[in-house]
Length: 324
Ligand SMILES: NC(=O)c1ccc[n+]([C@@H]2O[C@H](COP(=O)([O-])OP(=O)(O)OC[C@H]3O[C@@H](n4cnc5c(N)ncnc54)[C@H](OP(=O)(O)O)[C@@H]3O)[C@@H](O)[C@H]2O)c1
Image (cartoon, rainbow, N blue to C red; front, top):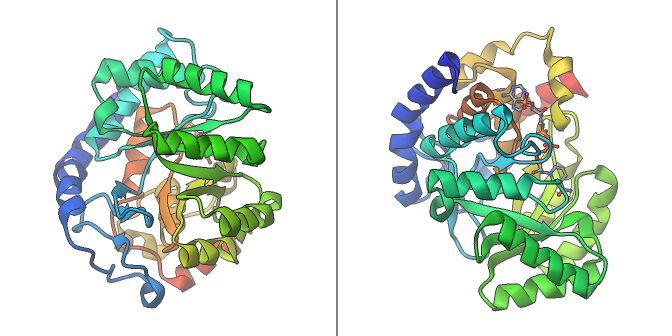
């Protein structure tokens, strides 16, 4: 069952984000009053009304998605029917009721696809969900078998985004993803990595192949993607999904004894998780961020990271200096 703190947080979100996110999705693009990068802000950045979960456009189509998504590595690798599984049902209810839509998973995350598919079917959320999974296999027969199994486990006949996981077998996996895109099995194709050492190759492939999305790591402790990968994505019109915004959770140990900066309150930021997510979203190349959690209270906290003004450049630099 969802605990009291999570319920109250969810209810508070419901009053703001739930009511306003759909309105934000219909509103013409406007610039954030506090976005220090406003001069370079693409027309795709579309902050919602104050209190609403931000939405941003996917450059290749203009389709808008909420900026806070869900990752499933680790957190969703739990036995079906276990207490942790039931708790994930509460996590996803808070997520969808709070205006969220994007879920990222992979056949590489043990049974996470099956957990996601079961919970989406149980909650009746599949049609509302922007579902992303991946290809990660070494030859064509294995790719085809893996894709068929992903659909079975996700209980669907299509996904919104199909990504080549860590650029694995890119020569076969990307053409296969494009075939599936042409057949209407995925709306978008993407390429992923999660370490700085993969950024150069990701940029090279992004320029050569022009996928709809890249997915990459970016955080106050690993801000390197802002150097050339993000500007290249903006130049090419490629959507950016950010993984590891919390450095797989390690960032919270570093933040434990640090007070939030004095300016946090003025931006409606009440926790380090909200601060780390707002940092990521303050780069205009970023389309969405996908923090993973198995806890209802943390899910409500994470949604709040996508509600409110963005950080000024100096504020972003202050955070990088604090955690670098
Ligand atoms: N190559 C790839 O394609 C690739 C690689 C890495 C990641 N990804 C994707 O990106 C997603 C996110 O990355 P990640 O899972 O590695 O790590 P992450 O999102 O950076 O961190 C997850 C950790 O943060 C904790 N957490 C979440 N919300 C919190 C909150 N509000 N307060 C305190 N702790 C919080 C979680 O613990 P609790 O459960 O206790 O909240 C979990 O231990 C993955 O799940 C996956 O979908 C893709």
